[in-house]
Length: 522
Ligand SMILES: Nc1ncnc2c1ncn2[C@@H]1O[C@H](COP(=O)(O)OP(=O)(O)OP(=O)(O)O)[C@@H](O)[C@H]1O
Ligand SMILES: CCCCCCCCCCCCC/C=C/[C@@H](O)[C@H](CO)NC(=O)CCCCC
Ligand SMILES: [Ca+2]
Image (cartoon, rainbow, N blue to C red; front, side, top):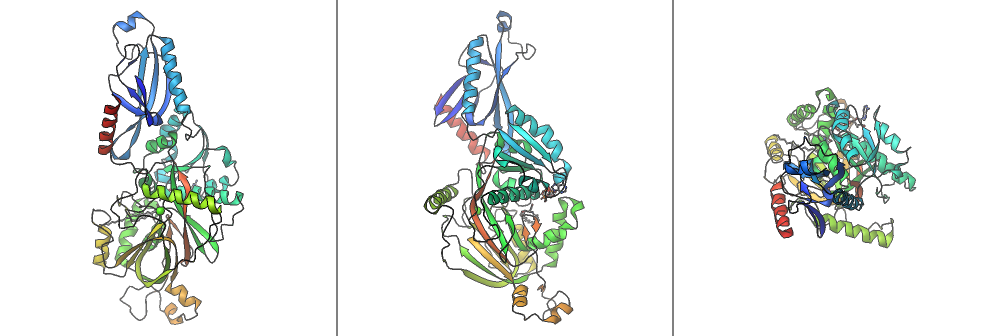
């Protein structure tokens, strides 16, 4: 067995020495950063017949637990046991490896865990106890666990506990639970720094202390877009190795009042209507989205309104790029540098540039603003395949009034390789902020509301067959409805940090890469 240095430290299990021998007959190559734990092992003679050694002397052994990368971004914990007759040599190896692990400074030691016992088919608590907690204890991570008793329990609790003693916060639940914990964390950080969340122009304080991760929901789009899979063991292993992925967060305001934060989808029209309808069908579980999706598709409502946005000029990418945001993304790294420079120059007080606003009026079937691709099992490439996790911008997708058939063609392209933005009725912009006002609220504000419209119900009186809805739609903010249709949205670059590393290139590439690294080492 050898430990070699080549930029990163790697442990290379092989059979080169006769003094220390792996129990299983295999070759393996693991970066130190992906070792979970090293333990002294009681050598069990029944484990394997190792011939003459067994009879000659007392054997000493240690076990290395490490990350094994499987298909589709899935991670698993595997172990390799090494034995030798020399107790001193065995101890030296164990000690050396433990010291190397101690040097991995980004690894969490103490975590605060919130479990929603009702989220994700009510399996969250069982999954945590059976699959996740044993891994945390193997990696010597201590945890304080809170099983929530009601909605907002975790959020309220985050305002009371001493969050600064934890290296991270883990939430066991779906996108809804993630959103709740994120609101608790960001809110607490702003409160402690004296920042008024109601001010839409306030520069928010980054959450550096606490990192969040989650699993086991019904859409799990944050997991799919940041790790590539929603799987509790994979998530737990990313936490243990201390992976850290910055994440953009949008703040949503109405009339100088803070409404919510969003990390995945802010959707008006189609996705807002699906959510509103599906809330009444919670008992159907994840199927509710398919049912309400079909119903909303058939209703084919569109909404009039005005969008004003500021383009994100600072970012290097475009929503029509063919390259997606992946681990170590160059575009997100550039934004990180820019942010660090800005913070150095101005502290938190960034000057609001008087940059030009672009204004678009129209009739829309859907208005979607996404901070990440929003990949999920229903749409493996997501709503905006080239959106970046941490570039300080959101992709604003406008789907204008079109026929049902064309809208179906647009939706189907979320499930195949064709470009979903390549339609004359779809526009996409990379933005740093935007505002939306529905026609109805504009009319209300200017007091030109035709009372007749109210009396004759919700469909447009002038064009009864046009499906033009004169009531507002609802904003879907990461799976929760907003009370106001007129909103002001701003992207805060890298406000949060996740226990993740971005999506890794697929396993084929990885296998090729590790093979070449082995060859370099030998
Ligand atoms: N003990 C509890 N009782 C009731 N509601 C809770 C409890 N704990 C958390 N919640 C709330 O339940 C909501 C949904 O949680 P979660 O996201 O875990 O479930 P889900 O059914 O998987 O939903 P999603 O569709 O968001 O994936 C969250 O908004 C959270 O605030
Ligand atoms: C012919 C079939 C074509 C099918 C095309 C389907 C395209 C689906 C794209 C799905 C995008 C999901 C975006 C994620 C939003 C989450 O923040 C939110 C909270 O979990 N989920 C929903 O609002 C739930 C939204 C569910 C929508 C179905
Ligand atoms: Ca982004």
